[in-house]
Length: 210
Ligand code: 5GP
Image 1 (cartoon, protein in one colour):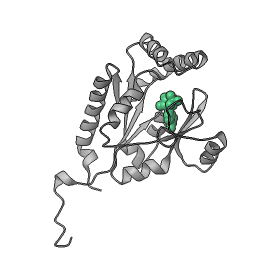
Image 2 (cartoon, rainbow, N blue to C red):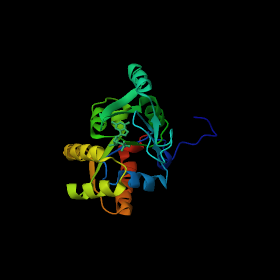
Image 3 (cartoon, helix red, strand yellow):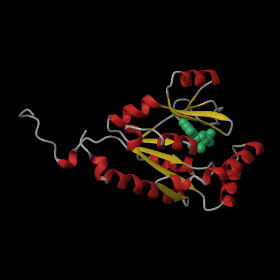
Image 4 (cartoon, helix red, strand yellow):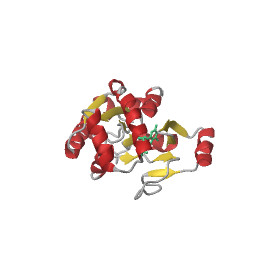
């Protein structure tokens, strides 16, 4: 240690980033929650790759990296994905390098991925698994979910039926997550998620000096 660099105060340690994973069946209020969380961006949102068509208003590189099937396959073949899954008939995947670099640089990362993707990360070993804090957001009932999906009106009747069928199966996965939030008003969901973030950042194991 040189004379100009005093020993770090325990309150100013540089820590490893936390990997917050949020899963929810479609219509549970996840997009609204993500928007509210991004009003106070003290984390980086991980932009996934997908072969799904962009919805009106979605921006390439901000909401998703919209890829052709061939582009997706070439990332897959190169082993670029930390996890990937087929969801509602489209491919989705998270690029490993982006997540790992941020975690190691001490930046908290937020991943919005489905239950299959979350399970893949739970099965990881090493820094990514150690950084994982997984949260499941779900509605109080299937009726609420159906109502919300109908109100959103972005899906065709066939897509909606598929999403509802998938939702019932996905919701069975909630006990696998460290935290569950039953969705209420958007601000309540955001307060609950923020409480999780705050508590996790205060955990001593998450404040180790790198
Ligand atoms: P949407 O098409 O409505 O944007 O997303 C559909 C589902 O795909 C959501 O449950 C979302 O969490 C999930 N998803 C988005 N990105 C990824 C990803 O990179 N990996 C996985 N496994 N799921 C994803």
